[in-house]
Length: 386
Ligand code: SF4
Image 1 (cartoon, rainbow, N blue to C red):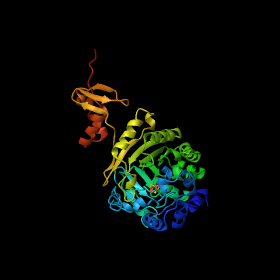
Image 2 (spheres, rainbow, N blue to C red):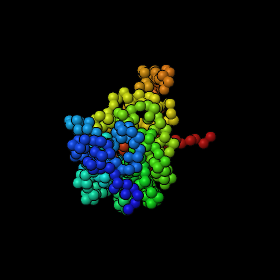
Image 3 (cartoon, helix red, strand yellow):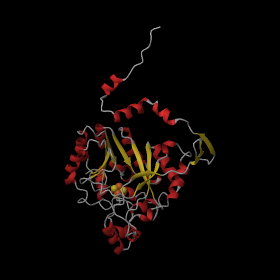
């Protein structure tokens, strides 16, 4: 058994352990266990500094979860957008492929807790129908392996899945959505990264939410992935009592960039049942973005998004930089709240018409001629010999 597997086995997960480790009332611990089981591995447990700190809040069950009874279980409507088990197909050229129900840590804010930890709800036995769907849908060029956490699979199983995807020529990019570099960095081993680098382009979306999660171990894990040629991006969730503060987010984003992890998204927390106590007013996220943009390197500034309830996808949220706009000018403010005027360009449509690339793609859409026929039809001006 590998070290990371042993650490999963040694996780805090039972009602007895919740009572003993965190002083939760036994009856409450049982109810919480039924609602969404706990799994806190020894590595992540060691990051807790005091009760109710930002690490504790992300992983220790809290009775407030049970008060949130009216909220939806699937606020992003993933299940309605699932044409076959294990696949969510929301965007035209991308698909989410759920390959396991297991995670290295069960996060209390998880938006997929209706399925996570339950191998009947994300089953390995239905992988074949998912592969068939991906084979038939040649418009899909980007597949995101998720779950659960795909790095809960053994290297062998993960490689089998990736190899199968690599037989589909239309799939260009494979992404792994994994929290392991943050919650169980021991999972990133030389054997794993040597396997991954055979199947590029492989991208990693990881998930750090707080600067205390940046440790020597997590730095090492991310360095191994990047050194193996996997670009690593981070998706953070904005959460009350965890990271709803500009200085905390600044430290997190700068820390990530320093370990070659590109901040990609900050999500406004979803409406998921049992997790609404993490939600913050939109103004908190906008204020954080205002204090990031211009104040730290643009490379460290992620997009702040709301994943639209009902399955509308990610919608970017920005502080307001455009103060007014008319046909002649745009009035802008910069990160220091200084005001600037930018003159509007004239004849924008004519400029666009002169763009050969745009003109060609427009013509391609309207014409049934092949490229070769189109090229033949282009009239070349005859130059008179002087
Ligand atoms: S690792 Fe991801 S899928 Fe698993 S519990 Fe945490 S947020 Fe949910």
